[in-house]
Structures are given as structure tokens and as C-alpha cells.
Length: 315
Image 1 (cartoon, rainbow, N blue to C red):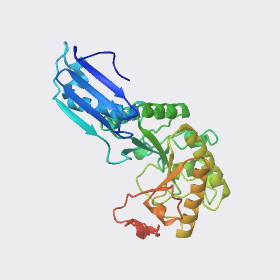
Image 2 (cartoon, rainbow, N blue to C red):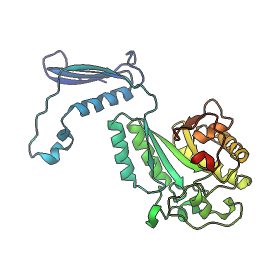
Image 3 (cartoon, helix red, strand yellow):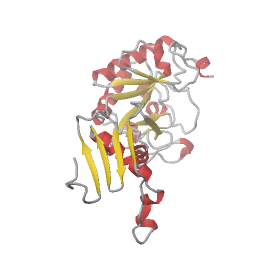
Image 4 (cartoon, helix red, strand yellow):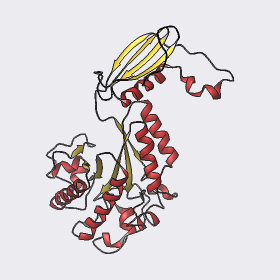
């Protein structure tokens, strides 16, 4: 799009989207001259990032001018030309709402800050030992029982599917893709406390509000575990148009190496069946992964060949 001004007779800000430009999917050109500011890109995403650069060039108080000053203030931008495109396709941050719950408005504020810094992925850590934070309609006790606590014993909370869809939509309007994570097979005490059948013992443990790790695990030898996970991936996947589903996979200290690899590979088929690409932490590299699956490293010394998932792997 562009404004309707013609010639150089007046000061103007031009916003231009031209698919023929060679700025790339998220790149842009910003030109500031004495009488004209031109933001140009080949895609709306690139134009959006150009506007974030203009925001960054303005004085800090311009974001709060209506509050800080009774009268409008003048701001000066330097004459310049910027041609910019991202070095990395994936530019993200994680927000852990499982250990400490954050409201929808809090998450939106986090997205706003990501967008200002041209980040394009929001990794939402939605389930852990301390809380389950997303409504799953086929398994209502996940939120009825599993969402009520957080670290320290203070009240937790959860997002309804409508609220989660609102977050996803808000992010997409700012060219941020939400990547949902349901950590498994460990970090699952909130789910285990909600449904006794997910435990090998058939007994639900009490809620957990501490910070220890590695003590919980889904019963990977029970078929109900995979029916449960299929429902979880299907419902969350239906709310997220992005390509990704993060299955965690870290610190699964209760499983043998063979159990762990078999679990990851089966979850991978579930994720793929629902049209998503699986992401896992670096421990998942020990499994036979599809070319489309992604491994994210969180342990500085981990290598692709790290097959150990027992306590020695986490020292």
C-alpha cells in the first residue's frame, strides 16, 4: 500500500508493499530524507519490521507522549537509508506460564515487546510439574485439578481455548508465531495429579509446588497415555496455525534409554498425524527423528549422539 500524496510538494510518510522487491520475506528498506519517509518491503511482515525500526529511531518518550506531555512534542529523525533483513529465520523467546501463571494481558505485553525487537516466535511453556495451563476439552480435569497451583503454592490459572486463540491471533497480527510446548514424558506431575490412569501405579500424586525436576513421568507403557497425548496435540494444534508443536523431552530421568527413544518416536508420529512439525529439547536427538523434526539445545555440552537420559546426563 502507499499513501495518496503526489510529487515532492509536501512532507509525507510512504508505506509501500511491492512483491517484486528483493528485500526478502522479512526484509525492508527505510529511507528518511528531509521531506519524506519511505518504508518499503516485499511483504507485510517486512513493512511491519520497518515500522519497528522507525519506532526505535524515535526518542524514548514518543511512546508515552500523551501521558508525559500536555502538548504534542516535535521529534527529529536523521536522514538515512537502511536496507535490512534478518540473519536468522527463527528469532524467539520462551515464556514459562506453567511454573508461574501469567494473564492474557501479560502475554500480550510480552508479544508487544517481542515485536518491537523484531522477534517472530513465542514459545509458550504450557504444562509442567507445577501447573497445566491450557484447556483440553476431552480431559477437563487437567484444568479443574492441574491448573490451580504454581511454584510457591500461590494460585495458578489456565487459558480457555478461546483465550488461547486470542493470544495466537494477537501474536499473528504482529507476525509472531506461537509455539506451544507440552513437556513430556517428564515434567508432567500436573497431568499425573489430574488423571490417575496416566500413572503406572494407577495412583495420582499430590500437586507439586516446588522446583525439583526429574521425578515425574507419564506411564509410557500404557495405551491411554498415547490416547491422551493424541487428544492434547489435536486440540492445541487446532488452535495454532503455526507449523510447530514442542514436546519438551527434557530431564526424563524415570525412563530407560530404550523407553525414552520409543516414546519420542511415537509422539513424533502423533504430532505429524496432526499436521505439525515436532520440536524437542536436545535429549530427543537420541531418537530416530524425521527430517522435519527440530532439536533445540539447552545443555551447552550436549551433542547429537547423547543417548543417555539418566541422572548422569544432567550433572
